[in-house]
Length: 453
Ligand code: GDP
Ligand code: ZN
Image (cartoon, rainbow, N blue to C red):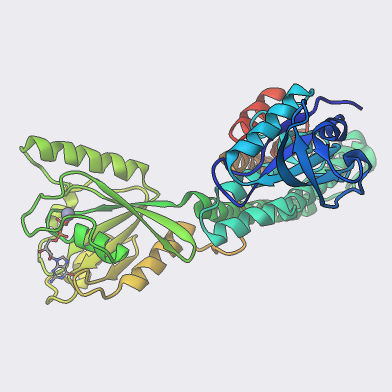
């Protein structure tokens, strides 16, 4: 099997200790032979061993001293014959090296092409390929672990496990369809229901672990809302433990929204401090109000701040009721409380609440913990899988199909409907792994990678 030989810089452009040029394809060693000089020809060197040598242009001019390593087909990242040349850092030598390789028959790799080849050659599945992108983009240790776990294939194993059990269930149900005269059949309705319930539960647990992984990677967006002067900006500052937003005692000074991020237990939390939401005739503030409504829409979680030293909760009714996860924050707990527990319970029966003092810094750790708990809806941050939005979508559809199968079974509509739902669920899982993925889909996925990966 011959494929064209691609090359790219695998490390970041710019100055550094070393710059690694990657080469992959059937002609890798033959092409590197022409620019790399050492005691032994590159193509005859033992695989996976670093060799010291020099790089030369076509006319023989020496331009760098490098280490080079050769990988045999079947035993490399892409699965193809490949090579790595470790040039001295600084873009010039690596650039020259790539130019020489290209003039000798290699071509520049497209974004993600090395990983795409790894996928095409069956070295990794799509879930793992996407985990590679996750590792590159990870901004915290925990996010990195979540991606690495997916790359190691433990996520893939779970998906394959689900698929196998779905296949077994479908096969059993099919036998019953084909031989209805066999009376009770191979599998009782009860047994099918039990198995479907187990699969559903597993699918849900997987979704919750993926949600943790996604949160770790993308961070959580939290919008602070509340009436003017309740202490929104103070709270933001206290959470960030630095003075970023402008705090004043005049209502309505935080006109624009301000965004800041803090990291709690590896979870990046992006907080948006919005202008106070209230009826206003002031034009600038009106814009602020619109912004807060918008940021509420975009937020994953809403932090509603209330001044507990003020007796009046009636104004709260004027704020839009958030359908989302919301935490009621009773600020200024250092001052005598003027709203009663009963008032709050009456106004916000369904939301978790917490008392803090932004000014004195009390209750902040508890608040951070509550944010985490609310965002994960009881799930754990640890053990997350880093998946892409596409994979999450596949899982959500799998769950839908399984629920539909379960409903059809309960309703006694017939095995063929149950079977078709199960087959939908399996189709979703195989698309998650990239089985029979279309070129378009692959283009879309790999184009988001960087060149050289
Ligand atoms: P915002 O309009 O909701 O952003 O409110 P600010 O953060 O600008 O705060 C309004 C006023 O309340 C300022 O004078 C703050 O110093 C004060 N404030 C904020 N948090 C607390 C608190 O926890 N305790 C007390 N006593 N005052 C606070
Ligand atoms: Zn403010």
